[in-house]
Length: 79
Image (cartoon, rainbow, N blue to C red; front, side, top):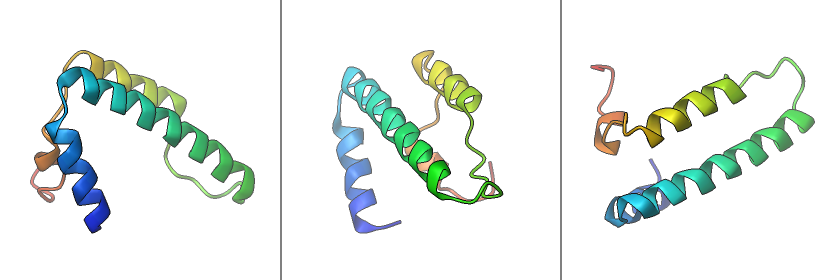
């Protein structure tokens, strides 16, 4: 993980829940735009595993509070 990413995560952790949800929505829009741009420039056999359905399901889980702490996301293969 880069220093910038670590710093961004620390900042996100310091935000209120409402601010974190707003950040999540902004990030999901950025990811969708980036994915759209990448799929236009990448060969068709390039597969990111990203799908609109997956994003919608993840968004619904986040809005319902069905999330894991960020620290658990990088704990390794034990999850």
